[in-house]
Length: 348
Ligand SMILES: NC(=O)c1ccc[n+]([C@@H]2O[C@H](COP(=O)([O-])OP(=O)(O)OC[C@H]3O[C@@H](n4cnc5c(N)ncnc54)[C@H](O)[C@@H]3O)[C@@H](O)[C@H]2O)c1
Ligand SMILES: O=c1ccn([C@@H]2O[C@H](COP(=O)(O)OP(=O)(O)O[C@H]3OC[C@@H](O)[C@H](O)[C@H]3O)[C@@H](O)[C@H]2O)c(=O)[nH]1
Image (cartoon, helix red, strand yellow):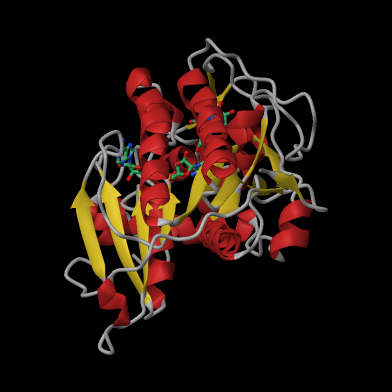
C-alpha cells in the first residue's frame, strides 16, 4: 500500500477518518482543532503549548507524568477554557478525542533517561504504541519528537536523514537512542499498515528558558555554573561537538512539520557547530569571565560530533533557525537568574 513520492517521503494510502460525533453538525458547534501534547509540561512541550494556545481556534490537552516536567511551566494556562492538564503516564492507554497529537513524552536529559532505563524504554515503545493506537482510533495526525541520538556516534558528518546511524544496542544510552529508533519504526509501521498520518522530527540539542536548572544537559549546567560562580564542568576531552538550537526556532519547526505534507523524518536543529570547550568559552565571555573551566570525566558512548544537515527542512518546510547561540544564551541567562534569585551586576 505504501508509495514513495518524488521527494523520497513515504506515503501510505490514508484511511478515511472515523465519522465525526453528531455534535460536530450542531449549528452551535465551534470547529476548533483539539490538540494533544504528551510531555507538554516539559521544556520544549511547554513552549509548544504557548505557541499553540496563541491560536484561538486551538484547544490544547496536555498529558504528563511530571517526571522531568512541572505544572509551573504551564501555570499561565491552568484554568483557561481552551486548556486541560491531565496527570497521565503514556505507558498506560488514554481515551480522548483529538485531531492532532504532538508526542513528546520522554525524559530527554541523559542523567534522567539513564536513571530508570527500563522505564525509558517503556515510555518510548509502549508510550508510542499507545499514542499511535489513539491516533488510529480517532483518525488524528501524530508527530513524534525523535532525536539526533538515532545517529549514535555518527560516522557521517553532518548528518542527513538518509544516514542510518552508528548506535550501540547494549550501551547505557541505548534505552533512549534505541528506544527512539523503535518509536520511529512503530510510526512508519502504523503509517504503512493502518494509513495513520505521521510526522517525525529528529531534534538536535535544544536549549532555552525553562530548562530544569538541574537538568544535567550542557547548556543549562554551564549557565547555572556561571551564574553561581562555579567552575564550568567540561566533560573530557572537550573537543566533542554539538549544534544548539534555540527553543522558539524548534517550536516553529515542529509546527511547520505538523502542518505540512511531509512525513519526515526531518532534522530540526541549528547547524552552528561548537566544541564543548568553545561553548564554555562563550558562556564565560557572555555571563561570567571569572569562572574557571574544569575538565571532568565523561560518560560512556558520548557522541564525538553532531551537526544537522537541514537541507530537507529548508526545502520541504521553508524552515531554518534564526537565533544564534550568542543571541540565545543571554535570553536563557535572564530566566536562570530570575529562578536562581541572582540578579545581574547591572540590575543589582
Ligand atoms: N531538548 C532537546 O535537546 C531534545 C533533543 C532531541 C529530542 N528531544 C525530544 O523532545 C522531547 C521533549 O524534550 P525536552 O527537552 O522538553 O525534555 P523534558 O524532559 O523537559 O520533557 C519531557 C516531558 O515528558 C514527560 N514524561 C516523561 N516520561 C513520561 C511518561 N512516561 N508519561 C508522560 N509524560 C512523561 C516529562 O515529565 C516531561 O514533562 C522528548 O521526546 C525528547 O526526546 C529533545
Ligand atoms: O556539564 C556537562 C554536561 C555535558 N557535557 C558534554 O556536553 C555534550 C552534550 O551533552 P548533553 O547532556 O547536553 O546532551 P547530549 O548531546 O549528550 O544528549 C542530548 O542529545 C539530544 C537529545 O535527544 C537529548 O536532549 C540529549 O540526549 C556531551 O558531549 C557531554 O559530554 C559537558 O561537557 N559538561
